[in-house]
Image 1 (cartoon, rainbow, N blue to C red):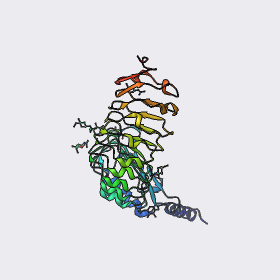
Image 2: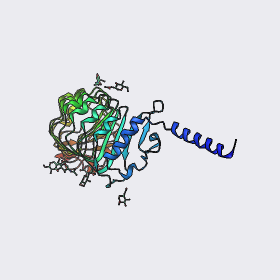
Image 3: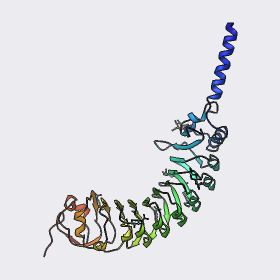
Length: 329
Ligand SMILES: *[C@@H]1O[C@H](CO)[C@@H](O)[C@H](O)[C@H]1NC(C)=O
Ligand SMILES: *[C@@H]1O[C@H](CO)[C@@H](O)[C@H](O)[C@H]1NC(C)=O
Ligand SMILES: *[C@@H]1O[C@H](CO)[C@@H](O)[C@H](O)[C@H]1NC(C)=O
Ligand SMILES: *[C@@H]1O[C@H](CO)[C@@H](O)[C@H](O)[C@H]1NC(C)=O
Ligand SMILES: *[C@@H]1O[C@H](CO)[C@@H](O)[C@H](O)[C@H]1NC(C)=O
Ligand SMILES: *[C@@H]1O[C@H](CO)[C@@H](O)[C@H](O)[C@H]1NC(C)=O
Ligand SMILES: *[C@@H]1O[C@H](CO)[C@@H](O)[C@H](O)[C@H]1NC(C)=O
């Protein structure tokens, strides 16, 4: 074999091995390059080079067997203000996507495109710390495989669509830190999978639907809204952490049935009345804040109740006893 032939042969082999090492599905690759274009060629996607295997690109994951794209996670560790775009409908053309994330992109604006409902395998959807606007779309209920839905820290407005209650596999739903209005849909009390529910820092009003008493969620955060009335339906049998602070809830604390699993209870800044019930001394409370309410009577002695500060009890109607000043008879 001459040296020339040897080099030709090696070159051919190198070429072939390169061509065959491209595991990425050609259709997926085409779609990804379209998405990159639709996102205005952001620096964050600089690794999306058409001459390389898209399964090797940052922010992408391929299924190890089928090599179809199953994950697209575009995020920046610090807010990336260069990234200026809307979520393109082309993301709906990655049919095997299970994970989709856009995170810490303050100039990602506009609504969530309906094309996202084509992603029937989607399990994890996080679009947070962006400037997504418009309503929380009712069509998200079509994504019945979702286990995790996070649209927190956005610019979403309007009311929460009741259809989301149809998402039977949710482990957690985060709609906190938007500008949502209206009331909490009664369908949220019929989530079959008892998801953790985060709706804090919105402008939600009305009462908590009584259907919540069927729910066995472990975390419920409704803080910083304009909710009124009786909050006792949220105290389900599996509850561990509940934050109802900074609303206008008005109910008798002594009538609430607390789950033995409760470790964190934040009620500060409401209109809660009655006594602090003795049963709270039997709980392994790591956090308690009942300040700025209308509670009365002696703080029961025992359990963790004296581990908390004056600031977790102060500004009530006539609450007394350690750590507050002792009760006058
Ligand atoms: C944003 O763009 C500016 C100017 O083009 C550049 O200097 C900077 O490195 C970019 N930042 C990021 C995070 O890409
Ligand atoms: C949304 O945009 C506003 C105005 O540009 C900005 O102040 C805010 O930080 C952005 N929101 C997020 C979550 O990045
Ligand atoms: C949910 O995912 C499974 C398996 O990934 C798939 O067979 C099923 O069709 C998906 N559900 C829907 C509504 O597409
Ligand atoms: C936030 O939403 C409001 C009302 O929809 C809109 O006027 C505003 O431009 C949005 N802000 C950003 C930064 O997209
Ligand atoms: C709630 O509504 C008030 C009054 O309309 C407004 O000033 C405030 O910014 C809103 N808060 C949120 C989180 O949207
Ligand atoms: C909640 O727990 C109770 C008692 O453990 C049970 O009877 C009920 O079916 C559960 N509900 C849901 C939606 O899981
Ligand atoms: C409890 O709430 C009050 C009133 O908002 C606040 O001053 C205090 O720091 C809170 N305590 C804790 C431990 O968060």
